[in-house]
Amino acid sequence: MKSIVISDLHIGQYWKSNNSRFSRARKIIQYLKKNLSMFLHYYGVNTNLIIAGDVYDAVSANTEMLVYVANELTPILSKFHHVYAIAGNHEVFIDRQGQQQSLLTIGLQGGNVTIYDKGVYTNDDIDDVYHYVFVPYQANIDDIFMDDNFQQYLSNSKKNIIVAHMTPHEIFSFNKFKMNDFIDKYTSSTGEYSIPYILLGHYHMVSMYKHNNTTVVSIGNTYYSSILDIRAYEDVSKAKRFILINEDGTIGSGRLMLPMVKSYSIINQEDFDSKVDAIEKECADDSDKLAIYITSPILIDYSRLMTNGYDVYFDLIEDKDNNNSPILSLNEITDLNNIKDSIGGNTLQDRWNKYVTNITNISNTDRLLCNWLFSKRVDADLTGNAIIQKVKEVIMEDHK
Image (tube, rainbow, N blue to C red):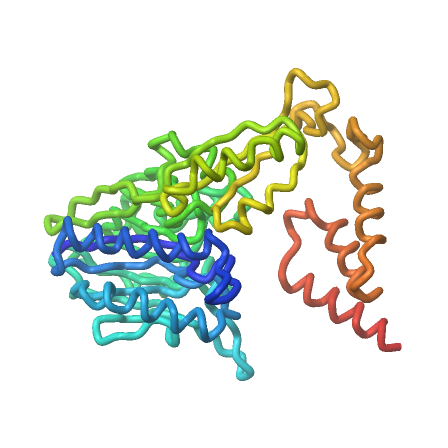
């Protein structure tokens, strides 16, 4: 039996309301349906679907969105032999009893759906080749991997595939946990387990590396999530992908269907205003099949395109022929805070102070927190607990 593995669907991102959904929110669901239908068409209904976390974008998803998604996706998901989904960081929350819960248990339903929302789960029945270990996102997920008790989840008799929602240091260097340490611990010459593949959700860029005999794969997300995705549109090695696990245990990948990217180079606001009618006319017939990519050396207001239902990505680029370009070359910068931009002559700190001072609809407490977060923006060791503690301190001080 074949299995398809995808991750980071982020359903509900940019959602407004049923009558005024931002184009990208609509396309995330539209193209997910297209890809699920493609899987069924090419690989048949006797295929499993495995989702490595972040089916939803936020636990604050409203009822309207959940109902809409259920109506749109349930008929397609029900056609797969089975659907296995682990919780990602975007859809978990801590309840009043201090226990982790997941939106998945509400949003994904059906007789052929299995949810793994906390702890570690194993499954020997997905296919005849692999023993599957599922590790949903948890605050202590790094510790779970390195705990000596993890071996209880591994099989001696079958090859192991681990599906988890996390990103190790080897894929994104800001993270401290090293997957290679885990691999060495259980698959070295003295180890007794075969772990040929570790399939990871969470990091949105496609990435892969091999350590010893283990291939670690960052699956990536299912739709364009940033300007980096758009820049890499024509780079096949960075294309959005799904993982295919064949009946014989071999593993490959395929490219997901996504909107074609149409690019426009804009000089300034006047240039955009003079071209916007032509851009809309050119894209009108294929608006559901396109993502519009606008590059410009200065900030412009392109909201008209978004208001009219287009999925727009804006890229502020350096104009090498214009000495007044506000874009700074990072390899020439030693201290970002003290660099003056070529337009206003203000430092980054000066510009922030002006911005936050001019905001009129926030309290002094919120303004204080904003300033503190800005001061910590390059602190790689800043943790969620540190932010919570600071919020408590500011609130207590405000109530004195």
